[in-house]
Image (cartoon, rainbow, N blue to C red; front, side, top):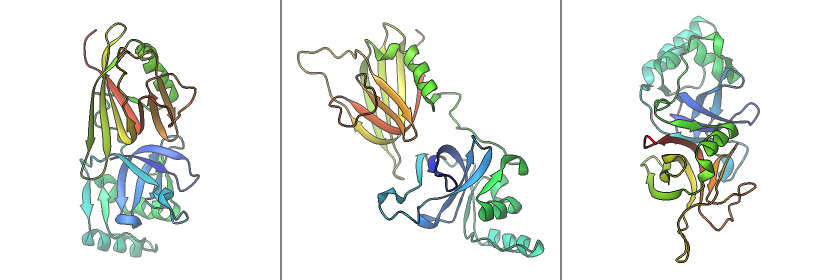
Length: 255
Protein backbone atom coordinates (compact mmCIF):
# COMPACT_ATOMS: atom_id res chain seq x y z
CA UNK A 1 0.00 0.00 0.00
CA UNK A 2 1.36 3.40 -1.05
CA UNK A 3 -0.04 6.60 0.51
CA UNK A 4 0.36 10.33 0.82
CA UNK A 5 0.13 11.30 4.48
CA UNK A 6 0.38 14.34 6.72
CA UNK A 7 2.89 13.82 9.52
CA UNK A 8 1.52 14.10 13.05
CA UNK A 9 4.91 15.41 14.17
CA UNK A 10 5.56 18.43 11.94
CA UNK A 11 2.61 18.33 9.47
CA UNK A 12 4.97 17.72 6.55
CA UNK A 13 3.55 15.73 3.64
CA UNK A 14 5.11 12.32 3.07
CA UNK A 15 4.70 9.72 0.34
CA UNK A 16 5.43 6.26 1.69
CA UNK A 17 4.69 2.59 1.65
CA UNK A 18 2.44 1.54 4.54
CA UNK A 19 4.08 -0.94 6.88
CA UNK A 20 1.01 -1.60 9.03
CA UNK A 21 -2.42 -0.26 9.85
CA UNK A 22 -3.50 -0.17 13.48
CA UNK A 23 -7.25 -0.35 14.18
CA UNK A 24 -9.92 0.53 11.61
CA UNK A 25 -12.15 3.27 10.21
CA UNK A 26 -11.77 6.77 11.58
CA UNK A 27 -9.69 5.35 14.45
CA UNK A 28 -7.09 3.87 12.10
CA UNK A 29 -3.42 4.75 12.37
CA UNK A 30 -0.82 4.02 9.68
CA UNK A 31 2.85 3.19 10.14
CA UNK A 32 4.85 4.84 7.35
CA UNK A 33 8.50 5.62 6.66
CA UNK A 34 9.95 9.14 6.68
CA UNK A 35 12.94 8.92 4.31
CA UNK A 36 14.06 12.47 5.16
CA UNK A 37 14.39 11.77 8.90
CA UNK A 38 15.06 8.02 8.56
CA UNK A 39 12.29 7.21 10.99
CA UNK A 40 9.11 5.20 11.08
CA UNK A 41 6.13 7.37 11.96
CA UNK A 42 2.61 6.76 13.19
CA UNK A 43 0.02 8.84 11.34
CA UNK A 44 -3.65 9.19 12.26
CA UNK A 45 -6.10 8.59 9.44
CA UNK A 46 -8.32 11.42 10.72
CA UNK A 47 -7.27 14.78 12.10
CA UNK A 48 -9.06 15.24 15.42
CA UNK A 49 -8.55 19.03 15.34
CA UNK A 50 -9.97 19.90 11.91
CA UNK A 51 -13.72 19.38 11.59
CA UNK A 52 -14.27 19.69 7.82
CA UNK A 53 -13.24 17.68 4.74
CA UNK A 54 -9.56 18.44 5.39
CA UNK A 55 -9.53 16.05 8.35
CA UNK A 56 -8.41 13.07 6.27
CA UNK A 57 -4.65 12.83 6.78
CA UNK A 58 -3.95 9.67 4.76
CA UNK A 59 -4.78 9.43 1.04
CA UNK A 60 -4.33 6.02 -0.57
CA UNK A 61 -2.48 6.10 -3.89
CA UNK A 62 -2.03 2.36 -4.44
CA UNK A 63 -4.16 -0.07 -2.39
CA UNK A 64 -2.07 -3.23 -2.93
CA UNK A 65 -1.54 -5.07 0.38
CA UNK A 66 0.35 -8.09 -0.91
CA UNK A 67 2.34 -9.56 1.98
CA UNK A 68 0.08 -8.09 4.66
CA UNK A 69 -1.36 -10.28 7.42
CA UNK A 70 -4.28 -9.48 9.72
CA UNK A 71 -3.93 -9.95 13.48
CA UNK A 72 -6.88 -9.95 15.87
CA UNK A 73 -7.67 -11.28 19.34
CA UNK A 74 -4.70 -13.65 19.66
CA UNK A 75 -2.34 -10.77 18.82
CA UNK A 76 -3.96 -8.62 21.52
CA UNK A 77 -3.36 -11.31 24.15
CA UNK A 78 0.29 -11.72 23.11
CA UNK A 79 0.81 -7.96 23.10
CA UNK A 80 -0.74 -7.69 26.57
CA UNK A 81 1.54 -10.44 27.89
CA UNK A 82 4.59 -8.72 26.41
CA UNK A 83 3.59 -5.45 28.11
CA UNK A 84 2.93 -7.20 31.45
CA UNK A 85 6.31 -8.97 31.30
CA UNK A 86 8.11 -5.69 30.56
CA UNK A 87 6.08 -3.45 32.88
CA UNK A 88 4.68 -1.41 29.99
CA UNK A 89 1.27 0.17 29.46
CA UNK A 90 -0.79 -1.83 26.96
CA UNK A 91 -1.32 0.32 23.84
CA UNK A 92 -4.78 0.69 22.29
CA UNK A 93 -4.34 -1.89 19.55
CA UNK A 94 -7.42 -3.90 18.69
CA UNK A 95 -6.54 -4.91 15.13
CA UNK A 96 -3.19 -5.03 13.33
CA UNK A 97 -2.89 -5.37 9.57
CA UNK A 98 0.51 -5.26 7.93
CA UNK A 99 3.85 -6.93 7.30
CA UNK A 100 4.65 -9.75 9.80
CA UNK A 101 8.10 -8.37 10.71
CA UNK A 102 6.33 -5.19 11.84
CA UNK A 103 3.17 -6.54 13.46
CA UNK A 104 4.93 -9.33 15.37
CA UNK A 105 7.58 -7.00 16.77
CA UNK A 106 5.76 -5.99 19.96
CA UNK A 107 8.62 -3.82 21.22
CA UNK A 108 8.40 -1.75 18.02
CA UNK A 109 4.59 -1.52 18.24
CA UNK A 110 4.77 -0.31 21.85
CA UNK A 111 7.47 2.23 20.98
CA UNK A 112 5.71 3.74 18.00
CA UNK A 113 2.36 3.88 19.78
CA UNK A 114 4.01 5.72 22.67
CA UNK A 115 6.37 8.06 20.79
CA UNK A 116 4.84 8.17 17.26
CA UNK A 117 8.36 8.18 15.79
CA UNK A 118 11.02 5.45 15.92
CA UNK A 119 14.53 5.62 14.35
CA UNK A 120 14.93 3.13 11.53
CA UNK A 121 18.05 1.56 13.01
CA UNK A 122 16.41 0.61 16.30
CA UNK A 123 14.62 -2.45 14.93
CA UNK A 124 15.35 -4.89 12.07
CA UNK A 125 12.46 -3.90 9.82
CA UNK A 126 13.04 -4.39 6.10
CA UNK A 127 12.46 -1.35 3.90
CA UNK A 128 9.83 -1.81 1.23
CA UNK A 129 9.58 -0.25 -2.21
CA UNK A 130 6.79 -0.17 -4.74
CA UNK A 131 6.36 -3.56 -6.41
CA UNK A 132 6.40 -2.02 -9.90
CA UNK A 133 9.43 0.24 -9.33
CA UNK A 134 11.42 -1.76 -11.90
CA UNK A 135 8.71 -1.38 -14.53
CA UNK A 136 7.86 2.30 -14.14
CA UNK A 137 9.81 5.53 -13.62
CA UNK A 138 8.29 7.37 -10.67
CA UNK A 139 8.14 11.17 -10.74
CA UNK A 140 8.50 12.13 -7.09
CA UNK A 141 10.40 15.44 -7.28
CA UNK A 142 10.72 18.52 -9.47
CA UNK A 143 14.04 17.11 -10.68
CA UNK A 144 12.28 13.91 -11.82
CA UNK A 145 9.68 16.02 -13.64
CA UNK A 146 12.34 18.16 -15.35
CA UNK A 147 14.24 15.06 -16.45
CA UNK A 148 11.13 13.59 -18.06
CA UNK A 149 10.23 16.89 -19.72
CA UNK A 150 13.72 17.04 -21.25
CA UNK A 151 13.42 13.48 -22.51
CA UNK A 152 9.96 14.08 -23.92
CA UNK A 153 10.84 17.45 -25.49
CA UNK A 154 8.40 19.22 -23.21
CA UNK A 155 5.53 17.39 -25.01
CA UNK A 156 6.30 19.49 -28.11
CA UNK A 157 4.68 17.96 -31.22
CA UNK A 158 3.16 15.16 -29.13
CA UNK A 159 -0.50 14.28 -29.14
CA UNK A 160 -2.74 12.55 -26.65
CA UNK A 161 -3.56 9.16 -28.16
CA UNK A 162 -5.63 7.50 -25.41
CA UNK A 163 -6.98 8.07 -21.88
CA UNK A 164 -8.17 5.24 -19.62
CA UNK A 165 -9.78 6.17 -16.31
CA UNK A 166 -10.31 3.60 -13.57
CA UNK A 167 -11.96 3.91 -10.16
CA UNK A 168 -11.65 0.81 -7.99
CA UNK A 169 -14.11 -0.45 -5.40
CA UNK A 170 -12.01 0.96 -2.56
CA UNK A 171 -12.25 4.45 -4.05
CA UNK A 172 -8.74 4.80 -5.47
CA UNK A 173 -8.65 6.51 -8.87
CA UNK A 174 -6.10 6.46 -11.66
CA UNK A 175 -5.79 7.61 -15.24
CA UNK A 176 -3.46 6.03 -17.81
CA UNK A 177 -2.64 8.46 -20.59
CA UNK A 178 -0.72 7.54 -23.74
CA UNK A 179 1.15 10.31 -25.55
CA UNK A 180 2.73 9.89 -28.98
CA UNK A 181 5.81 12.03 -29.48
CA UNK A 182 7.40 9.99 -32.26
CA UNK A 183 9.17 13.02 -33.77
CA UNK A 184 11.36 13.41 -30.69
CA UNK A 185 11.15 10.55 -28.23
CA UNK A 186 8.54 7.92 -29.03
CA UNK A 187 5.40 6.80 -27.26
CA UNK A 188 5.07 7.08 -23.49
CA UNK A 189 2.40 5.98 -21.05
CA UNK A 190 1.81 8.19 -18.02
CA UNK A 191 -0.09 6.74 -15.08
CA UNK A 192 -1.62 9.33 -12.76
CA UNK A 193 -2.60 7.71 -9.45
CA UNK A 194 -4.80 9.22 -6.79
CA UNK A 195 -6.54 11.36 -9.41
CA UNK A 196 -8.17 14.44 -7.91
CA UNK A 197 -9.12 16.33 -11.06
CA UNK A 198 -9.28 15.25 -14.69
CA UNK A 199 -10.34 17.43 -17.62
CA UNK A 200 -9.59 16.64 -21.25
CA UNK A 201 -10.39 19.31 -23.84
CA UNK A 202 -10.19 18.16 -27.50
CA UNK A 203 -8.70 20.41 -30.16
CA UNK A 204 -11.17 22.64 -31.96
CA UNK A 205 -12.35 21.92 -35.51
CA UNK A 206 -9.89 24.33 -37.11
CA UNK A 207 -6.89 23.13 -35.08
CA UNK A 208 -4.58 20.12 -35.25
CA UNK A 209 -4.23 17.93 -32.17
CA UNK A 210 -0.48 18.41 -31.59
CA UNK A 211 0.58 19.86 -28.26
CA UNK A 212 2.95 22.81 -28.58
CA UNK A 213 4.12 22.82 -24.96
CA UNK A 214 2.96 21.48 -21.60
CA UNK A 215 3.30 21.87 -17.84
CA UNK A 216 4.43 19.16 -15.42
CA UNK A 217 4.65 20.49 -11.88
CA UNK A 218 5.44 18.60 -8.67
CA UNK A 219 4.67 20.05 -5.25
CA UNK A 220 3.64 18.84 -1.80
CA UNK A 221 0.09 18.26 -3.05
CA UNK A 222 1.15 15.90 -5.84
CA UNK A 223 1.50 16.46 -9.58
CA UNK A 224 -0.17 18.86 -11.99
CA UNK A 225 -0.18 18.43 -15.77
CA UNK A 226 -1.62 20.79 -18.39
CA UNK A 227 -1.42 20.80 -22.19
CA UNK A 228 0.09 24.29 -22.28
CA UNK A 229 3.01 25.92 -20.51
CA UNK A 230 1.90 27.63 -17.27
CA UNK A 231 4.10 29.41 -14.74
CA UNK A 232 2.36 27.56 -11.91
CA UNK A 233 -0.62 25.18 -11.47
CA UNK A 234 -3.86 26.87 -12.42
CA UNK A 235 -7.08 24.91 -11.96
CA UNK A 236 -8.97 27.57 -13.92
CA UNK A 237 -6.93 26.87 -17.07
CA UNK A 238 -9.33 26.24 -19.96
CA UNK A 239 -7.32 23.44 -21.59
CA UNK A 240 -6.67 19.87 -20.47
CA UNK A 241 -5.67 19.39 -16.80
CA UNK A 242 -4.77 16.42 -14.64
CA UNK A 243 -4.14 16.78 -10.90
CA UNK A 244 -3.12 13.62 -9.01
CA UNK A 245 -1.26 12.45 -5.92
CA UNK A 246 1.38 10.48 -7.83
CA UNK A 247 2.75 9.97 -11.35
CA UNK A 248 4.79 7.26 -13.04
CA UNK A 249 5.72 6.71 -16.67
CA UNK A 250 7.22 4.18 -19.05
CA UNK A 251 8.20 4.07 -22.70
CA UNK A 252 6.06 1.90 -24.96
CA UNK A 253 8.23 1.59 -28.07
CA UNK A 254 11.92 1.16 -28.92
CA UNK A 255 12.50 4.46 -30.65
